[in-house]
Image (cartoon, rainbow, N blue to C red; front, side, top):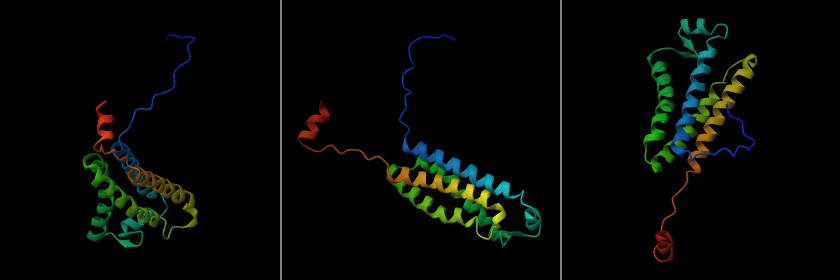
Length: 158
């Protein structure tokens, strides 16, 4: 390692496209979403309820499994869609899906005991922060500046 007396320059912050930020946020959301469900298995009696065919007061039949898959598939697909959709559609889809997932995230605490307040408070809080990031990134999506005739066109050619 070579040491110099010259101070290091400021760190560069490369421009990251909005699509990459959105994909990263949805990926983080999915990790959190999955691990919250996984860690819930450690609650006393949770696995017994699953064996008894009940999860969060719902019977674990085909409808429940299909609904659970849908609730997981949408954010999973948002990772891909955030990188693949055209900007205008991408912005709208991210705004709609993130808005719809706010009540889904909050619902996870419904009916839970106060014993797990810190667990659900932290997990739902983090999910909501990620969804707020998605909403902000999509809402503030940079717009191109249109070149108009006349003076702006001349300026653009310089």
